[in-house]
Length: 401
Image 1 (cartoon, rainbow, N blue to C red):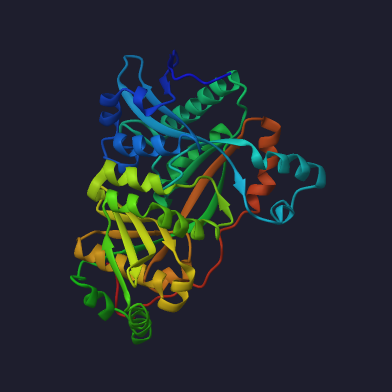
Image 2: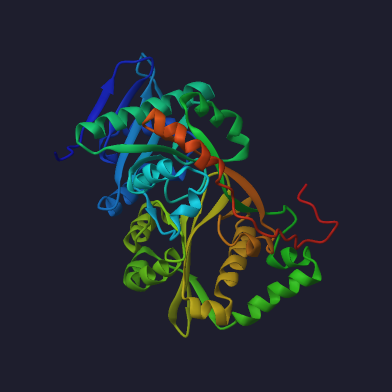
């Protein structure tokens, strides 16, 4: 059965509007509920994502109302098949008995409802009116995911898991309300975050706050990368070099052990057209050939998120390309007067040499079947964030107070 666009409302304590296209939502209510102006929940951003990735993912949009049809909240959901690149599956399930392990391994390729944004880190999957309690927020999200699963089952599109991603530490007391709905929570790899000190007026100020050892490391990276040039690319320039951009991006994706979703070069093009200067797409060149890029999003709270990079690994080894990208991001944030940089969850030790500190992140998962959901517990308990050596590059008397 072919899924046809529709928007469904149902009677309950909280009314739910479910749409399978961003074109079908109530735009005024959506914008009204996104009062914090989260770029990842903005309609232009979502249209760009949906239009370029519809062949890869299915999208669902939830709007929540009270009994008098007052908008209460919104949420975005992607339906995706888990792609697992880890060769040794048994290592993941080593704490589970053989018969349970075989059962769960079959679900590796199952479809999963992801409430959140597959292409950003943090709480970018929903927004609710400030007056709504955390219990009601999580209740609505749980009901919304159930509503989607019921719709999918009608179309013989069985959903196995619900996943809510990712929550920052300050939200743990609120998000833990999901446990009441049988969600299992687990920590994932930390997000490396660099606060921008108010006294840093230039990149030289930033370097001056470092110890001699780490300042020397930074200068060494700049020396190795001296032949590199970089500039901001427009949507048309991204399009002109899209084949090379895709190649560089695939280089990085291929290094990842686990992926729930992947962007394409044409997504970068449409995102740039959709959100303009809020998306910074920086191209790096060696002898006028594109050898790397960094895609970053400026958020409404004054921070910047380094979403994606693409690398030529040979140039990276010879010219410290990735290090140069990271240092340039610091310089950019200082120049723009931004408050912090979200560097993401990879290369934690390297990013700590820049002064980034780890921020815990938590996910919540639930299987649609109660028995299978109970079997998740030993697997979840065996998941631990990656270990790394945390470096502190700053002088002993330097603080972010």
